[in-house]
Image (cartoon, rainbow, N blue to C red; front, side, top):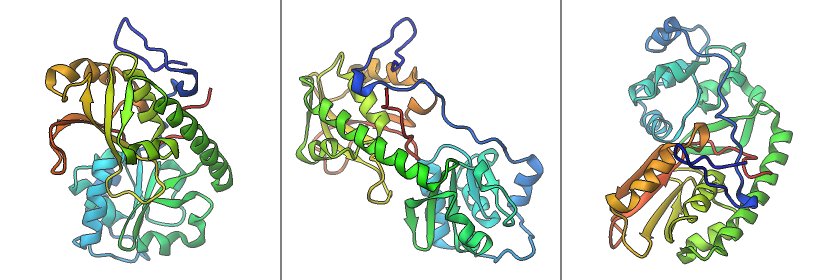
Length: 287
């Protein structure tokens, strides 16, 4: 299996870091244009109304808009908030009754209204660990394979990430800050980042300043990396041009949602930030 490089070139990743060529899981059903229009003015009997202007809804919507890619299940007021935060309405799946099929979504924004609607019916189809929490609102991953099977798959993926992280720490072209070193060794880093770093170090020396996952719950794989040195120099447009082209050439789930130069307030100089979407895939490091 390969991490696909720019046209005319492929970079083979070390055996422990080989990646699947499968595309991002796409839900089976999208929202009709009529359904999207109804999101802005829900009138569903029995659905507990929640104030759209609620700050927690706004914060949750902004997190989803910045971090999630895929089909998002939501109660109509939350869908309206998400659309207002810039989420593509075509990726929203309004949940109006317990008869609606949650399994058509990749993630669900679990508001008090959604809990009241589905009750214990949420437990078999949503991962027990939230991707993020805002007050009483949780962003939860959908588990089409069932919670038990997902838990086993997640445990295997965590073991793969630990092995791959330790392989990277032994790579002569990669060095990392103490916290980043611990996170790599503990398997806390997203598999897509591990694969990307393994491929990039085939051509460049890197210093990893930090891994992160803004706003996510503890235990969720870290989906962003800050690189403060490339081949012994601070990142610049010239230095990162080849890396950007390489990452832009990736397909589906291995395509980052952010690759850019930044100047964090706690950094001495410019860094290169690479960030992937939520939720993190499982099984992509398995050979």
